Image (cartoon, rainbow over all chains, first blue to last red; front, side):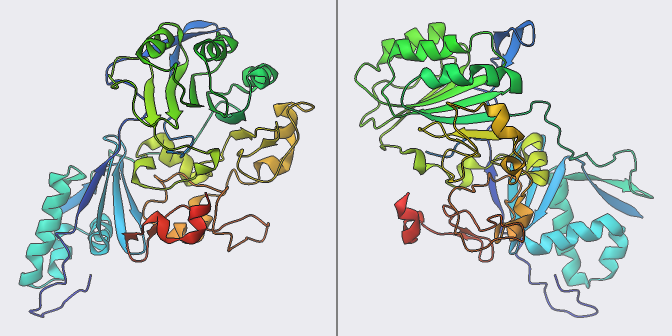
Length: 60
Length: 349
């Protein structure tokens, strides 16, 4: 942006230019459901079944 | 004097022609013009009053408008006397405890899964993505689940060709037994056999396309992820290949099944052996800041890179391919997306 000292010109404002996009919370299948799986390695019945936080492939 | 404080969870990424403001708690990104960036930067170093002094009366109202926008979007808050020092910046350090976070494997039959099972445990692999050339029966889906029952895996995603047995009953039966599967894609399906209802333990998708594994590497808005883990990884590592192992249909162990270089074959070498080769990790720290064109893109930290299909135009001093991903139609200099088909090279894949 240009700084205008004592000038009466309008700033070349592109204020109206806004684009919004939302990304889904990819780690959840349903908004309120959490699934567990048993895991021997971690010695638990409650290992959280997760989707990755990013797409591991981009085929579609 | 009043001061504007940007919230710590707000990340501003400057591109060549626009900026991207990412809210890492709400998982939303928004695009703004470059001049907004300058206002935000000035607000970090000067009081609101001293910034306003530099502008004439006519221009001041626009500065007010910008500040109002920042407040309205809840990107920050105003404090009196000084910046509020009680909110230090968020650390973008990235730590992943598992040696390997994901494996992308192309298969013709399920026997290879038995071969990698032990390594999956040893390496603490979190996610397994299977692309199958073979039509998988219900039993085979269940066998995949059984193979990894009790394992360290957090989730499995499967791409399989569609076949006539796949109907509502098939999906319901799978839903009863599947534990780790979080996503199913049936490709080559002319018409969706069932209306997807949000009732299963996993996502089911039917694609009319005859998806080849080489369809991978697409870059577009739907593959962007605004979340702090993803962004932190992208700031320090390659957003696709970091901690990934790829295995192609012939059993070759690679960074990605679609890349050329092989680090051994699964039939005579373990994944741990392949991983021990220093060359295997050479792309792991190649961030978007080092990739041509991407380094000037405002989406660089929310985008997932692709090193398998690139424009193949630039190499760095270590011989790494630092060219822009081939299947990205975005030009950060003009801020425009091109239709993918307009580049003849991209039609090959």
